[in-house]
Image (cartoon, rainbow, N blue to C red):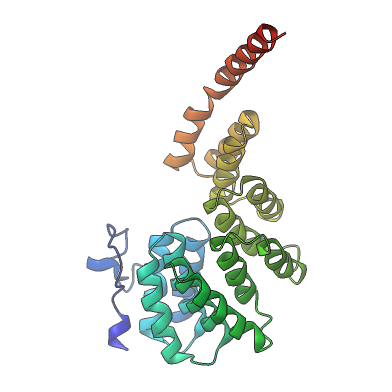
Length: 268
């Protein structure tokens, strides 16, 4: 299992409790598989994808026969745009789970994001033909269809949500982040709103919701969302930066409306 002990992706500075290469230091971080996985998920769902990668990699060095850290590893890479690395890890995962529909689906996703959309769709078709009902299979399918600019992505995500309990905010967040990356701002807002409705204490959710509000020109809502994020985590710099940026939008919006009125009068 030594080949899984180091994450083969872009390095980032070590966090407290981590040594060179982001390896968790015994005593400074939980070292059991279950505890490291818990930390990995916490980091993933607070937007710290790099930190999550290090923890998922640590999980795999402890036990690479469980599928959950493989899924987290691949998703975290793809959400950061590290498609080549995601493809490498999906191929490694297939060595451990050659017939698992989830791994087949993620392999197809990494293909599609790497420019091989037709192959990705065919791989996803194969996974779904095996009767796969796992949420990741349908999320991967919707993601591939977004990549292919196929409107059926909406059906795939709705398929995921209809089978999930309403309190499952993590699924709403994951779909929201994916939709946001394709500039589907209104759809992303819906997912983030559903997520914060069940998890009000997650600063990253409020931050992402605020970003999407801003993209839609809803300056007041954007500001309120970022203020929620900062109330939970005052040190979260991205939310502070968004707050400063949004503070100028009402004036900009007013000037745009004034210009529009003048233009309308001139054309009469």
